[in-house]
Length: 108
Image (cartoon, rainbow, N blue to C red; front, top):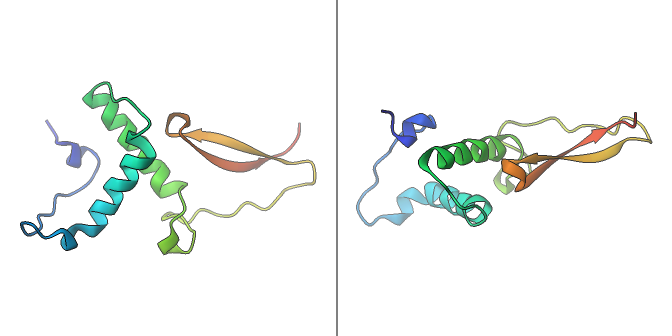
Protein backbone atom coordinates (compact mmCIF):
# COMPACT_ATOMS: atom_id res chain seq x y z
CA UNK A 1 0.00 0.00 0.00
CA UNK A 2 1.33 3.45 -0.92
CA UNK A 3 2.11 5.93 1.83
CA UNK A 4 0.27 9.24 1.96
CA UNK A 5 3.35 11.04 0.56
CA UNK A 6 3.58 8.70 -2.43
CA UNK A 7 -0.18 8.93 -2.93
CA UNK A 8 0.03 12.73 -3.18
CA UNK A 9 3.06 12.62 -5.45
CA UNK A 10 5.50 13.92 -2.83
CA UNK A 11 8.94 12.68 -1.87
CA UNK A 12 10.31 12.43 1.66
CA UNK A 13 13.51 14.42 2.20
CA UNK A 14 15.25 13.94 5.55
CA UNK A 15 16.69 16.92 7.41
CA UNK A 16 19.25 17.00 10.19
CA UNK A 17 18.06 16.31 13.72
CA UNK A 18 16.86 19.47 15.49
CA UNK A 19 17.52 21.70 12.50
CA UNK A 20 14.30 23.65 11.93
CA UNK A 21 15.98 26.08 9.50
CA UNK A 22 16.39 23.22 7.03
CA UNK A 23 12.68 22.59 6.61
CA UNK A 24 11.22 26.11 6.62
CA UNK A 25 9.28 25.56 3.38
CA UNK A 26 7.65 22.43 4.76
CA UNK A 27 6.82 24.15 8.06
CA UNK A 28 5.23 27.05 6.21
CA UNK A 29 3.12 24.72 4.04
CA UNK A 30 2.01 22.65 7.04
CA UNK A 31 1.04 25.87 8.85
CA UNK A 32 -1.00 27.08 5.84
CA UNK A 33 -2.70 23.71 5.49
CA UNK A 34 -3.54 23.64 9.19
CA UNK A 35 -4.88 27.22 9.33
CA UNK A 36 -6.79 27.17 6.04
CA UNK A 37 -8.12 23.60 6.12
CA UNK A 38 -7.65 21.45 9.19
CA UNK A 39 -8.72 24.09 11.73
CA UNK A 40 -12.14 24.18 10.02
CA UNK A 41 -12.83 20.50 9.28
CA UNK A 42 -13.34 17.38 11.37
CA UNK A 43 -11.44 14.59 9.63
CA UNK A 44 -13.49 11.39 9.69
CA UNK A 45 -11.06 8.83 8.27
CA UNK A 46 -7.77 8.43 6.45
CA UNK A 47 -9.52 8.39 3.07
CA UNK A 48 -11.40 11.57 4.01
CA UNK A 49 -8.08 13.18 5.03
CA UNK A 50 -6.49 12.19 1.71
CA UNK A 51 -9.41 13.66 -0.26
CA UNK A 52 -9.21 16.90 1.75
CA UNK A 53 -5.47 17.16 1.13
CA UNK A 54 -5.88 16.45 -2.58
CA UNK A 55 -8.57 19.16 -2.86
CA UNK A 56 -6.46 21.59 -0.83
CA UNK A 57 -3.40 20.95 -3.01
CA UNK A 58 -5.46 21.68 -6.13
CA UNK A 59 -6.71 24.91 -4.52
CA UNK A 60 -3.22 25.82 -3.26
CA UNK A 61 -1.64 25.52 -6.72
CA UNK A 62 -4.51 26.64 -8.98
CA UNK A 63 -6.42 29.32 -7.05
CA UNK A 64 -4.56 30.63 -4.00
CA UNK A 65 -2.34 33.65 -4.61
CA UNK A 66 1.16 33.68 -3.12
CA UNK A 67 2.97 36.81 -1.96
CA UNK A 68 6.34 35.35 -2.96
CA UNK A 69 5.03 34.98 -6.54
CA UNK A 70 3.87 38.62 -6.75
CA UNK A 71 0.22 37.70 -6.03
CA UNK A 72 0.19 34.97 -8.71
CA UNK A 73 -0.69 31.30 -8.43
CA UNK A 74 1.98 28.63 -8.98
CA UNK A 75 0.20 27.49 -12.16
CA UNK A 76 -0.07 31.10 -13.44
CA UNK A 77 -3.78 31.34 -14.16
CA UNK A 78 -4.91 33.89 -16.71
CA UNK A 79 -6.71 37.03 -15.51
CA UNK A 80 -10.19 37.09 -17.01
CA UNK A 81 -11.20 40.43 -18.53
CA UNK A 82 -14.74 41.61 -17.83
CA UNK A 83 -16.78 40.36 -20.83
CA UNK A 84 -19.62 42.94 -20.83
CA UNK A 85 -21.26 45.48 -18.58
CA UNK A 86 -23.96 42.95 -17.59
CA UNK A 87 -21.51 40.31 -16.36
CA UNK A 88 -21.48 39.42 -12.66
CA UNK A 89 -18.78 38.00 -10.42
CA UNK A 90 -19.67 34.47 -9.31
CA UNK A 91 -17.85 32.41 -6.70
CA UNK A 92 -17.10 28.73 -7.28
CA UNK A 93 -16.73 26.78 -4.05
CA UNK A 94 -13.35 25.09 -3.57
CA UNK A 95 -12.20 22.63 -0.90
CA UNK A 96 -15.76 21.73 0.03
CA UNK A 97 -16.86 25.38 0.27
CA UNK A 98 -14.10 26.59 2.63
CA UNK A 99 -12.61 28.75 -0.11
CA UNK A 100 -13.87 30.24 -3.36
CA UNK A 101 -12.54 31.04 -6.81
CA UNK A 102 -14.21 33.99 -8.49
CA UNK A 103 -14.87 34.41 -12.19
CA UNK A 104 -17.06 36.44 -14.52
CA UNK A 105 -20.43 35.09 -15.63
CA UNK A 106 -22.49 36.74 -18.33
CA UNK A 107 -26.17 37.28 -17.69
CA UNK A 108 -28.43 34.85 -19.51
